[in-house]
Length: 216
Image (cartoon, rainbow, N blue to C red):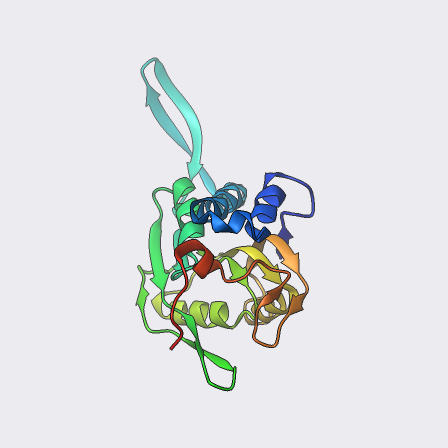
């Protein structure tokens, strides 16, 4: 399932517009905050699909019957670009466990690249809800490789994927690998360059959030 939250106008489409805007992008703090806010709204929407249980809560005046999450999810993200969206999800799922991966594109002189994954910090995922965030779903290669590596930590179900902008190519790649995943995105673009960048996209989310990096 793919849920494009820009199909109907909302604050998310306004935040996506700011993420794309080359003038607004110069404000790194606002860029990070817009990613965070998109993830917060998506987190709220995801919570509606998660199992709940009844709990008796003691108040100063008596006892209230409330619905609460039956179990807490595991929030995963891909360093470094995924950190703002991870923070947004963690603002809402504030009792969640967390996982971090260092998947990145390792570029070659001919312009091609491969996905390098050198670090994972993860709790047990056995019978856990997994929500993984990455702002740009371009080719889908890094996301698929990351999720495949997470399988070593247990069988997770369901799987939710959170991104700000997705490309149709990346969506298809992820759906082929994980047909039961739910993909949540702020917007969907159809074009991908030969170097794997989304058009019109927004550029390099990691650089815009945290500054440019040296390529090795």
